[in-house]
Figure 1 (tube, rainbow, N blue to C red):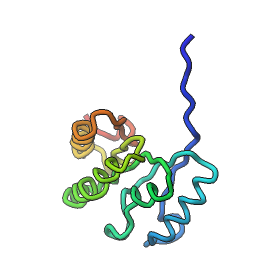
Figure 2 (figure 1 turned 120 degrees about the horizontal axis):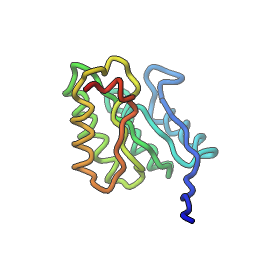
Figure 3 (figure 1 turned 120 degrees about the vertical axis):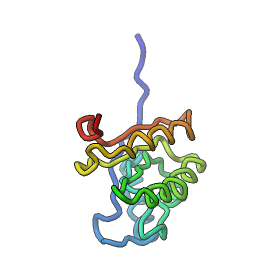
Length: 142
């Protein structure tokens, strides 16, 4: 009979839970506390504060694994691409990323073609990495 591998329990983390502009120290403290109870974290954003806080790096420094989210900004493809190039790609290279999640359960994403674009891009850039979306199928568009 095949066995199902054990995976440490995880939790979703959003640095915006307590403030509109989290600092690297606040995110680091949150993730250190999180690591006491959970083996991995799913994030909504790869950065905060316009890049002041690199979530992947802070998590790596805390020795915490991530399902790293790429938040999508409709009509601001340059912002999304900047987050992908500047934060997602380097995070994967650090080795603590368990997977990349594109999109964040956002109803405004209906019919927005950027989800398939970044799913394909991430799968191409990281062929051994699990890649998925947090959007429901009905929200991705057809």
